Length: 166
Ligand SMILES: Cc1cc2nc3c(=O)[nH]c(=O)nc-3n(C[C@H](O)[C@H](O)[C@H](O)COP(=O)(O)O)c2cc1C
Image 1 (spheres, protein in one colour):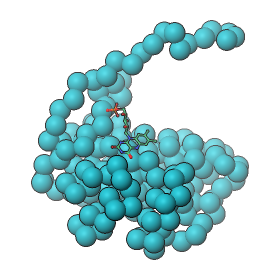
Image 2 (cartoon, helix red, strand yellow; image 1 turned 60 degrees about the vertical axis):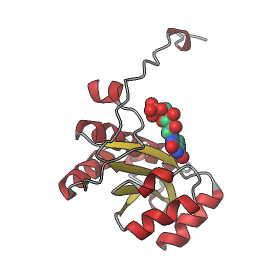
Image 3 (cartoon, helix red, strand yellow; image 1 turned 90 degrees about the vertical axis):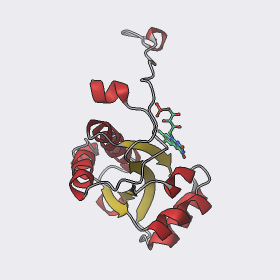
Image 4 (tube, helix red, strand yellow; image 1 turned 180 degrees about the vertical axis):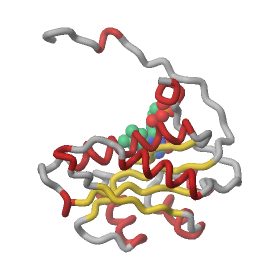
């Protein structure tokens, strides 16, 4: 509950590099996500190359924090593993959120950058990273050691909850 309720989008990072072992833990959290028919239709690209990270804001206008981020993880949907059509989107979202919760637990900061379904971002990243046609860039998680602190956001709203019928 602590990691879920304290999670906020962190867009400012220190220059400290994120350890490989932590990246692996984040990927472990991502791959622990539930998926339709247990299809696990995800693949990940760990982006550390500065030139590559700096190229992304030219493709994605709301990703300027990548100039500071020491690493970013791209979540891709793998259509070749699809058992139940269309569910890959929910599966990849679950993997992305799992990763964000783990980020908080590891003392790191991160923000989810939406890629899918914006065509220019999908095409731009596909070109930049040589992603094959049946893999769809879904979300990008920018991360690093936090250089900003945010209070937890209390979004609990009992009016959004219905019991037994609308
Ligand atoms: C699907 C999705 C796409 C998002 N895309 C971006 C983005 O492109 N750039 C960005 O800075 N934040 C992005 N965010 C982060 C949201 O702006 C953020 O989660 C929201 O404002 C709530 O704030 P919090 O994460 O600090 O609780 C995205 C979040 C989601 C779930």
